[in-house]
Length: 311
Image 1: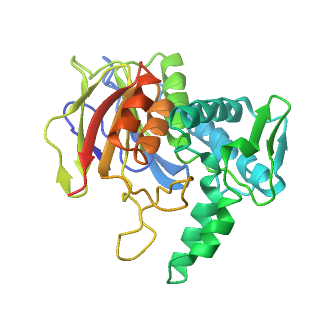
Image 2: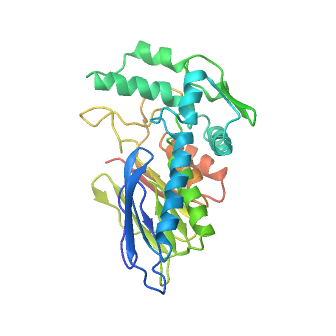
């Protein structure tokens, strides 16, 4: 879980916060509320053309949700999971899958978007008041495995019945990158986008880097992470849990079928793009320290900003 240290800039709450530099014309702050990636989102902009820019931002988010959402019945990802094949896939889906392939290899298989059937098993079982049976986990693992995914501009294909993808470990960051590109094209600078992962365009209005403070559980960690033209993503194995007791974390290991068993409470990674930082932080939750070192070595433009052990 992350939270932003707030100073002289405009703050945004919920799933898609955005902070924009106040222009010299001192345009009033305009606020819109909608839905982004399945959650309530609020957008505030201070810009003479705020209304038009906001409309383009929401349209872009809606377009990306129509590709990546697991909750929209008309999304490209839902169609792929239902049919096991998606012809003429969107470029954005192919781009994300290419990144997933690279992080899967560098993480020795820890990062694997085919985890969705296993995630669904845990969610369904705990909703019914019990953990999934070991036999059910074993059966479901036969539907998991990145080797069963092939993709090219012609089609994305899932090799076995019951396979399904979740891009929750990369899509939030990818959306942040696309919104950042849109705002940059509009001429905005000194802007911070937060879709659950941070993406900075420039630094703070008035000078300096964006100071991001991190929170592990209930504890706000000392110091801040400075962002300028860079992204930051954080993952916590128990940031979301399946069970009422809060012991079964949502980051599952595709190699064992079990929740993350490493010692990390919070992992934070910076990178030039939020999609990469998002995927790396997710993968790192499933790796020992030596594995994280090897993972980061494969992406020299990325950096490990925080590694907090569980209490």
